[in-house]
Every structure is written in C-alpha cells, then in structure tokens.
Amino acid sequence: MAEQEDSGLPPLAPNAQIIEGRTRRGKACRVVDNTGTVALEELQNLLQDLIEQDQFQPLGLSMTGGNTIQIGAPQTAHVQLGSDLYRLIVVDYEARIEGF
Image (tube, rainbow, N blue to C red; front, side, top):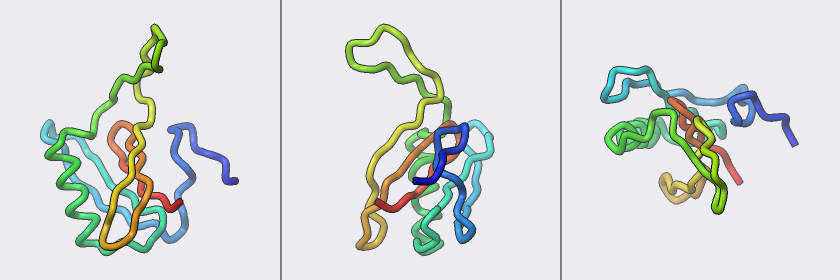
C-alpha cells in the first residue's frame, strides 16, 4: 500500500489529471483524478458541483461520541462519473478521485 501524503491524501499518480478553479470566496481549488481515466468534461462538472455546494473549505469533524473536533480532516464519499464508481476524498481545497 502506498504511503499517504501529510494532507491525508494518497500520493499523486504520474498520470493524474488536474482541473483547477476558484471557490465562491475566490480561493484556488482543484479536482485531481488520480486514476487518470475520467473524461475532462466530467471532471469540470464535478468541480463546478463541489464549488456550488461549498465543499472546498477546512471542515471540522468529530468522531461519534467524541468531544473533540479535528479541523481539516479528510471527508470521503463515493461518486459516479459516467458508468464508473470512484472514491472521492475532499481535504480543504482539493478533491481527489481514487479507484477502489
């Protein structure tokens, strides 16, 4: 298993595709397709959806039953792009698409 970067994200693959944009507050943000397989139009649509949903920002997360909040913890979900399902990891101003 590959070692993760300090951000909590897996290392950037050599064939990764990156689409950059700006949040509603003007901060730089990006979507990284670490699989290198998603169509650029799909990546652009995902970036716009994440910007509209205000997903790019340092979020706080607390563990169930815990009494502390960890700022900047990775948020994970699954996303379907075309006919394929991917893992989506959002940390601060970057969304990373990973395979299973």
